Structure formats: C-alpha cells, structure tokens
Image 1 (cartoon, rainbow, N blue to C red):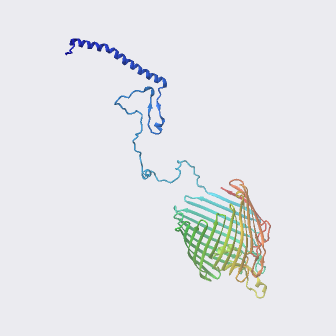
Image 2 (cartoon, one colour):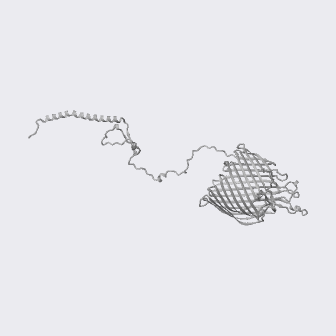
Image 3 (cartoon, helix red, strand yellow):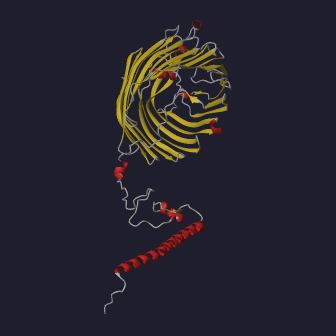
Length: 594
C-alpha cells in the first residue's frame, strides 16, 4: 500500500517550521532557569563561608616548599585543555641537590692562625725615651758618707747604664780605721740583629784602707798608720746568639789590670804587687731528639800574670768539655757536665777532671731535692784575694786549687712562696788558700823580742776537708708583705794536719725579716750569730752576734728617706785578728729618682 501523505510537500515544510518556532521559547526558558540555579548555589556557598580570603596549608610551604592558595569564593571549573603555570615561584620537585666534595669545600678557605682577628689600627701615644737616674746619699757616725748613683738611658737598639758606689769613713778608731771604696760600672748592650745581642761592661775601682797598728818597736806612730791602696780596671764583653729558643751560642772575654801597694815609713813593711789577666769562654747548646733534652759544649782559658817581689808568677788554666740535660716526666731532671782541665802556676801543675752531675726530683712543686757530685778547678785572682781580706800583703804567690765534693738537699714547699730545706755537704780541697798572720824574721840579734813581732796577713796553702750540715727556711705572710729568711749551719773545717782552718767558723746562724707596713713604709732587720773561730796554734777569736735594722719611707714617687742601724748590740768583734770593727753605727740619708 502506498503510504504517501495526502499533504503536499510544501505544506509539510511549512508545518515543520511552525513546530520549531513553537518549540524555541521553551528551550531558552529552560537554559535561563538552569543558569539562575547555578548562580544561586555559588551565592549560597559564599554566604556559608562568609569570606573571600584564600585557604593556605602551612605544610605545603614548610615541608613541600610549595605554595598553593585556594579561593573558595572564586571556584570555577577549569577550562579544558588550559593548564597555565602558577604565578607563585616554587622549587622544582624533581631537582637534584648540589653535592660538593670536602676538598672543593675547603679549597677556597685561606689558611690563617686560629686567633681573633686583628684589631683596627689605633693611635697610641708613645712615651719618648728618657734617661732614668736613681741615687742615694747619706752619712753616718764617725763621718762615714755613702753615695750611690744608677743611671741608664735607652738607645735605639740597646741600653746604656752607669753605676757608682762610694763608701768612706774617717774611722771609728783613733789610729787605724779609715777607708774609702769607690767603684764605677759602665754597661752597654746592643741588639745587633734579631738573633744576636752584645753586652759589655767596664769596671773601675779605687780604694784605700788603713792597716791596723803594730807595736811601737815596728812602727813609728808619728809617721802614720800604714796605708794600702788597691786600684784596677776590668773590661768584659759577651755575645749571645740565639738561632731559636733551643739553639744558643755564647762567646765571652774578660781582661783586666790590678795593682795593690802597701805604704809605710818602715821599709820592712812596704810591699807592692800587680796582676794582669785574660779569661775567655765559649758555650754552645742545642736540643736533642727527645722532649726537654739538651746537649752542650764548652771551653775556656784563664791566664794570670802576677808580679811580686820575687819575680813574675804566671798561672794559666785551659779546659774543654760537654754536657747533657734531660727532664723526665716533668719530675726527674738529670744535668751532666764534664770537663777536662790543665793548670800550671809555676809551682804546681796537673790534669784534672771536672765532673758536675746533678739529679733532681720534684713532686708537684711541693716535695723534692737533689743530689750532686762536683769537681772544680779554681784560680782566684789577686783582686779577689784582696777583697777577701783587706789586710793581706800585696806580694802573694798565687796557686790554683781543686775542689771535689758531694752534696744533697731536700725541700718542702708547705705554702706558696714558702719553703723548708735541709742539706749535707762534703768537700775535699787540694791546696786550699787561707789567711795567716805573717811573722817578722829576726832583724836585731841583740833584741830577741823583735823576733816575735807580728805583721799583716799572708796566704798559705794546705789540703783540707770540710763537712757541713745546714737547715733553713724562707717564708712569706700577708700576701708577701712580711718576708723572712733563716739558715742554721754546722761546719767542720779541718786541715790535713788535723788543725782547724784558720778563721773558718763551725757554727753560724743567719736571718732576715722585712715588713712592708704601707706601700710607702718598709721596715727590715737582719741578724748573724757566729761561733768562735780558731787561729793558728789553737788560739781563738771570740764569736759575736750582729743585729742590723733599716727603715725606708717614700715621700712621693721621686723622693724618699732611709735610716740604717748597724751593730745594734754594739758588739766589740773582729773579722780578722788585730782590727776591731765598728760598734753601733747610724746611717741616714735621702734617695731620689727621676
């Protein structure tokens, strides 16, 4: 059956257009309603949160290093196919960390001392180099002036100094006690380089001393008491070379002239002697392979030419040796030196071994001690002997002596800067020099009493042994304001002839005490007790007790005053038989510094 429509084709087209036209309004209404519903939902959501601030999660920043901000009130559907990059910078999650080697990390670091950085430069006012002078001027009873001056001035690379000491007295005895001692020292030091220092000293001395009164048969008192004059000059220089703190070299030389003359109206008493000498030494030290280990080499020469009435007395000494020192565990210390020496004084000559071995022990700076073996060849000069006994006659033939001894000492530091110590010494001496009164030979056979007349002192030599025990202490109280020192010694000085060594004491006590009352006031005292001493033929010189005191007061930083009392007990004592020393003696004066 033919289903063709009864409506024509043109009519169907018109009907279709009519249906579409009637349907269009309904479609647009539905779209507008859907849009209004969506907008109302967003508006309601904004009303619920009531904020337009973004939502930020802190963990995204602190842990993931990302920044994400969500804006709830501005949510929208993303546009398909559009993924723009965020405007906020973020670290690439796929990044590789920078790994640097240790060598590369420290390659650019400069190697410097581990110390604080230098301070910025600042202006410092430098005190100009000015000379400094300290002096002391005083006078005592019996018209005894004293004068001391010390002057030094800094040079560009060194130091220049001048020191003067003058002591004089008209004498405490009517006939024989006047004296004068004058000494001048000129010192100079210069830094030649960073490792070399040169020091030099010139010493001048001139003094006289009245000898004690002899008997009427031997001395014309109207002609005055005999007088002895000593004068000399000594020059010494030393060069120290320090390559570093451990390598040290030193070179030293000393030359001198000395003259002693005894004047009297009696030709039998007049005497004269002179001496010239040169002493040179070399010392070198360097460290060993171990910590606190040192080696050393030393050599020296000592030549004396003494002119006496009997002619020239030439004496020379040559020595060379080495040494070794080691500190073990900061507790034990070993110090060893050994030299081989040859001496000749025209009377005696020989080769000698000079050992010097010391073993020390120290426990925490509280307990300790040492044991020592020493051997030494000694050659005192005429100047040293005249200073030892001012009543020696000048014409003395000098001889060398050899001392070999053993000693031991222990100590206990019971407080800071306070110590108790005790020791024992034994010494054997070949050709010990000792002073003895000279006897005058017979000059008048008709008067035998003249044969027994005593003159002044002369030197004699004999072998001897000396044993000594000592005990002492040094103490400080009140933070060092009060200081005391004392020592007791017992000695047995014996000649090989089984006689006591003349004028050598067997018992001796020494002590001193100083107290700083205020920073400006200082009070001090000292004492010495000496037992009886033996002269030849078992005769004795009485013992004595000396007590001295002194007081110093500073008026200001430049001016001060002092007072000194010698022999407070006014002891009538003698160092050398025949001459009584001064009784109570008062000194006073001023000291100034600028």
